[in-house]
Amino acid sequence: MPNSFDIAVFQGDGIGPEIMAPTLAILSDLAVGGGYSLNFIDAPAGAAHYAQTGDSFPSASMEAARQADAILLSAMGLPDVRYPDGTEISPQIDLRKALTLFAGVRPVTVRPGQPTPLALRGGQSIDFVLIRESTEGLFYTQGRGEVEADEARETLRITRAISEPLFRFAFELAKSRKAAGRGPGKVTCVDKANVFRAFAFFREMFDAEAAKHPELSANHTYVDATALWMVEKPWEFDVMVTENMFGDILSDLGAGLMGGLGLAPSADIGHDHAVFQPCHGSAPDIAGQGVANPMAMILSAAMMLDWLGQRHDFAPMQADGDRLRAAVDAVVAEGAILTRDLGGQAGTAEVADAIRADLK
Ligand code: ATP
Image 1 (cartoon, helix red, strand yellow):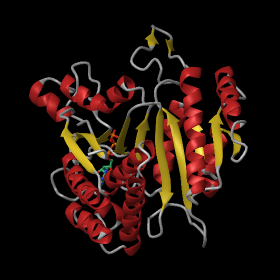
Image 2: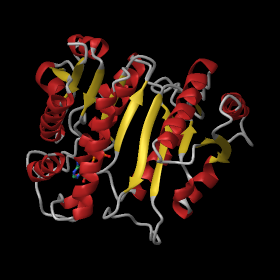
Image 3: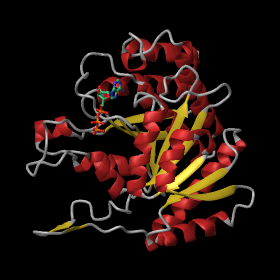
């Protein structure tokens, strides 16, 4: 079948399997209706797998990820299962490195009915995308920093090989959002170019890409002011692109604007591969109770449909991504069937059923 896609599925730890199961069921329904097929390939990995087998990321699972058309990942890691050196088990970071997933895409959307700590006035809504470079920046020497008796050093690295495709990706995203009526077509480069030469270099490459898109607008902001504006006037952002550590921090601020992690999806995208996973972790405190919110996982699956549809020029998949997002929006707006993190009493299965019902 020409429109047949292999999806590597990392069920993960804690609530991971609980939110993955209904997501796969919804995707299967959509595929039947949309005339495409999704072949889910189970890829064991994570903390529970490490505890059982001594291997946190079997090479067969990495190979399945490499061979797949896309990768769905729920959540990995458990606080009390660690490597002997005390570090956490996080195959998602191994995937980011192994597959050079340089663009961490974090949509920040506040839907009608969604709790947010901001007091939005009538007509104001939040809908922007933060792109966090995910392979270099201040994470470049992660795990290799030099520590001496009285001094420690880490290196910030910005390269042309990563920054140019990163900015290309940001402008393409702004263009497709504009075409879909979701934004004005504006890209903001978030940096600290007033202090660090590496960020002046970052900005220079951003400006070169901006010059190729006269139909879009581009501006720069310093990261400190950006943190302020994300709280004061988040509706002014459309697509933001930034370095790894700045993006790490600002994406949690974005999740805060969204009233928590239960509705925060994400994608880690490279040239040939992409991982789609919720922003939250494995939530071991509520695992096994059937109360986890599956919406961030489901919204991540919607991003996967967008990406696959665009990449393979297959409109029905993109349409299904939109439908899935709209179904989640409808259930949130209705407010009757929500998990505890969103102020409701429903369980994972009930929320997933409500989304499925809306899709019918
Ligand atoms: P990590 O370091 O792995 O990203 P974390 O320390 O940020 O994880 P999470 O596992 O994301 O922690 O959990 C943070 C809090 O949010 C916990 O109280 C958890 O129960 C809650 N939480 C996270 N995800 C969900 C979800 N899908 N549904 C309901 N509550 C959630």
